[in-house]
Length: 275
Image (tube, rainbow, N blue to C red; front, side, top):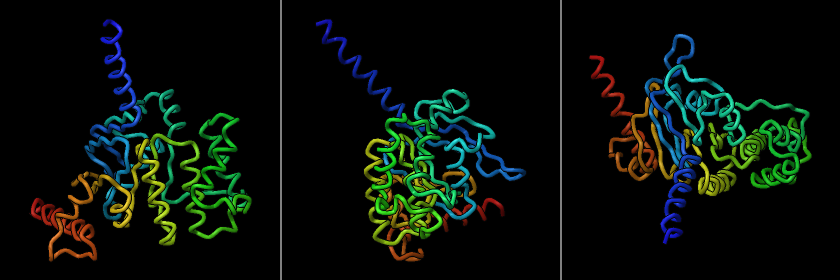
């Protein structure tokens, strides 16, 4: 009996640890760039799955992703990502090993080959040396560039470069994957394949995707949030967002009309508050 009593407690402990390791927690986040308050008092919790981040230009989406990627330190508030406190240098370094990040504009070395570039990021993430070459080959294969692995980056199209960027973000099998406009430059067939890849990764990892393409949200995301002026003004399922639409809303799909209605309602509320 003693053994049976102990087993449930062990499973409960393991469940809590696993949950913490696949969750992000943001509390009262503030981010000031120069004199501009880009993010203010933002709270966010996200668990494993694909989470879509929508909003107009200047809403703070990119700044939020850069903060979650530890490129920027928060001006105020706290972040606990994958159970790690980013304010602690040692835990921040551990987080970066488990993180994948594709910025909106990814710099690259033109004379690197695709393989060399992805390998470079694998080494930056301190992957075990014995695992690097296999992981790089796998990441390149997952984005459909195995036939261009030895091609120099300067010879690739914009869409191919974007796929190289995705490969470097996933090479370490990240527990937290942050993607800023990842489908920019991809053709329709490649976008369909990318959405399937996101869903696969989201089965075990926290995936946050910032995008202007509503159809990507509909196809890949289990949950979505809308940012406006550094705050989250809506959070729910894609179906819940679509349900907000009406005949007066712009858009070719129910989700686009829901997004339009939400934007219109927020702008109206903001104007009334200023009046």
